[in-house]
Length: 268
Image (tube, rainbow, N blue to C red; front, side, top):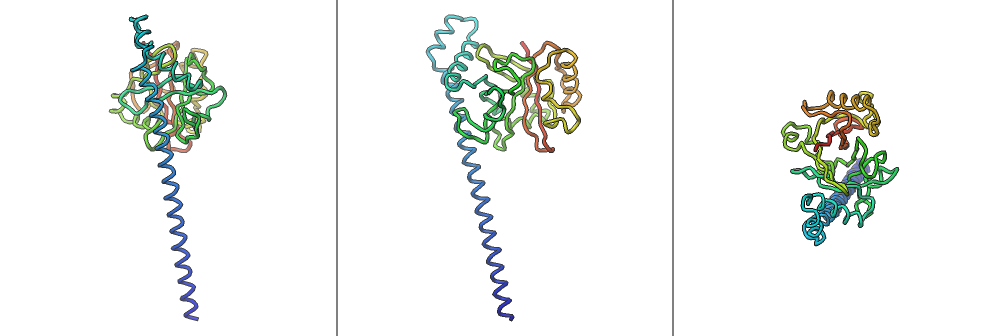
């Protein structure tokens, strides 16, 4: 009997050990796959960034366009960059950049679809990192008075993975300007609020996505007042009806279904 119990205990120990090994291998494999996918995604993003950089710095067409319009060389450079990339993918709506940060990415748009480019790269390959996405309720030409751009909060810091640093006063002071390139112009924005909220208003009953299309002063003022009241920082800059707003939205894992909003107004 004692010998039999010993065999049972040994079998249990071996089973537990085997299961532990299998679990370890599974988690190691999953982790390795995630690292590989992140590296592949990063490589594809760098490829698109390189395509844009080469277009700006080396295109002979740029020199010709600048000589034709010497008073506005920057917009010529921007237009050529967007035009070149648009030929590669006609879902390209613009380009977002925050100097001194990792954010330097194309903005994609699909009519009626917010999900595709949150799960695919610029070349149409499946990619869990995705790209920046202009909300489907906005216009492709970004003429709306409130633009909403979505991006994943990646642990690697890619896409909107660095927006969380806007919770820090020092980071905000050094990164208050946002640049957005369209096919026709280079736009500049100034941050007016940094807000922690939830995706559908679960936290305080205020759903920021309801304010994408703002067609009247009362609604605009209500939205800005909410942003200023809930902002993590006291920011002097604000917005008035007639200004164009730009909201950058990403997941915030400090709360259930959380969202972090960095909101700016167009200047200049």
